[in-house]
Length: 405
Image (cartoon, rainbow, N blue to C red; front, side):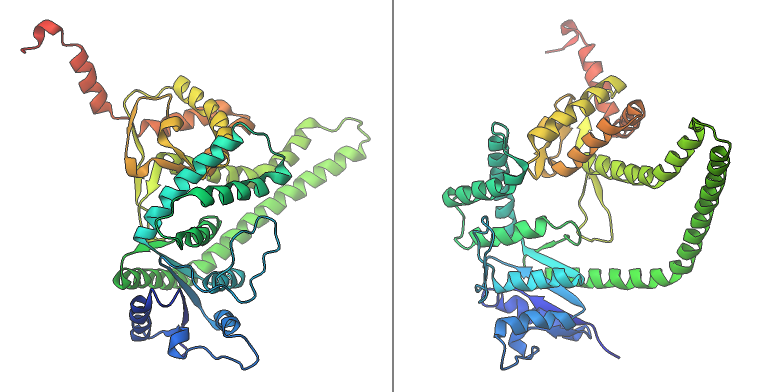
């Protein structure tokens, strides 16, 4: 029986021990590792060895990327055609791009200490973006180039802890900008990587087995829903034909409304899904390192009773926040919840700005703004520290004469 082929991509010299242990782990697991230093890759005589490594990914079933504190050798055919391409491609980055193009499953591992320095770097860079774009108007067509130039100037003066971080952080930026398959795991040693790979492979197996069980049910459900919608469309078309047949100059408004409602059904379902995702990510942070598990922890604890008026002020203020922070990746808890009395967890204080922007957009375009406010009131209310509020009120009721010191 054929075994899954696992391509392991990383710089070699600085991660030699990690690569050796991961290679042995994959073989012991019964899978087939594909790594250049173990003779796992065929090098055609008419190709560059770097191209052979990149092409080897085509026949693999999974791509494992390990990032340490080195960027790696520059790709021999590096070519920067865009004006804002200031950083050369490394062989490891080229392998990553090929894995993205093939859309094969990825497992990304980033050295814990490198990623800590990267988060500090991004915090300062995002502040620079926000400072510039809050006082300068830039045409949409020029914004990306201007942002790249700001980053280039910022990198020229930033004190990188290690010189290679200038390029490693460029690599990490590309991972963070992915819309799909952008989960990663921090590691300190090869044992962390092995433990995570076991969990991921178990998740893939569980997902594969579950798909066999659920497939017939999903198919039947989709067929049923499609049939019901087709029946609705048939009835509406028949009704419309009869209306036109009667030569009525003004079409029945309720009939047209039915057509609009039918067309909007799927859109409403999508909006509700995005709304729930935005609120969840604004109020909570998923602290699970397993992509198949969720461990939501609250970002804040409110020290006041949440009312519809306070929610209305907050959600209307989101529009302003979304505009002033649109060039940042995250927004801090402090400006986000400035209308409330609250406590927060420092490790969960950075909220992805995209969820704030999406929620602001949903509220602006909603025809039922009161319904949005009421729903938010319920979700915020779950994070109110009622016990703390009662204790605070009890203390304020004690007069100075009652205090025994």
